[in-house]
Image (tube, rainbow, N blue to C red; front, side):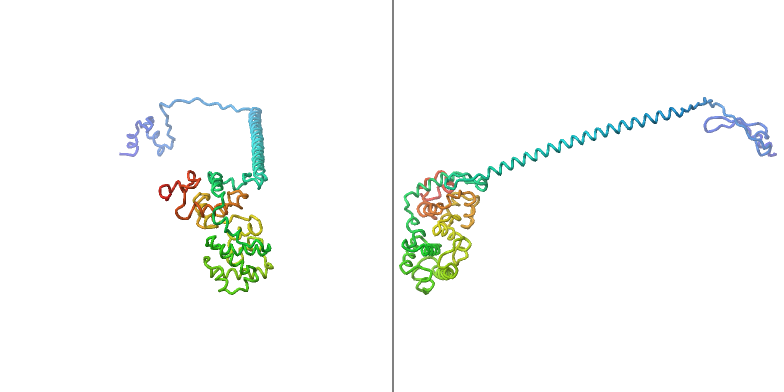
Length: 368
């Protein structure tokens, strides 16, 4: 079979994937461009004709007007935003001004508080205006307790009233010698009862209790004079060294400051504060011995229980009015010698038994 016959048999309707049909020529010349070199013309059946779209272009004037409107609108929006931002800035400045006024008011209030705290107080009046330290903390009922202690001590029947260190100096001695004797009595009173200290000072005064005489006295002689005070051997050494320092540095007198007194051998803060009061008539602090230390903890006149007399002194000086510093040692020492004893305190005889924290905690355990 010839090639033309084969191609003629293939000429038929053909269907496309889209469902459309193509009509091809029956003759080989029409169907095959290989032989006739003619373009195959195919027509699409079933396709809808679409209408042509006319595109109309706006004129240049319209474009410029649109651009102008857009520019104007954006400018207006930006100007409104600027106005809003300036408004917010003014609002912020107003807020800052208000805050600055509040700060000024707070400063004025703090200045008023400072001025109120700087009120001058009358030291002669026991119920003076409290300073800033005293307003921080004060024990409850302390005024009532102190007044009751004064009532119990009004008869002056305790050993400290007649044989305390303020009663040990020779009344006929010169002021400088009297001050020296008061210092020696305080040095002997450490861990010693007032009766023993007073007896030792009477022997020293008869012997000649002056710095130059004591400095030249042999240790054994001085020891016999002060025996049986507590730690008498050590105190012999302290008294002789102190006498030499007073002769060389203070012309036989005693120093007039707490620091210089505490620099002397055997002299501590308690002795120094009491010596300033007895010898010089100046109140530099509270003298806290074992009685004051014990009673202050029992009455809870300290914010927390203290372990040493020096801690107790710091606690008391933080809140107790200064006009009371001169009498608190004398009051509490006598109170501790007669009623608030170290062992078996006489709580049934105490006027503070109903408000005393120690009696309330140990009620039933203390022998009445």
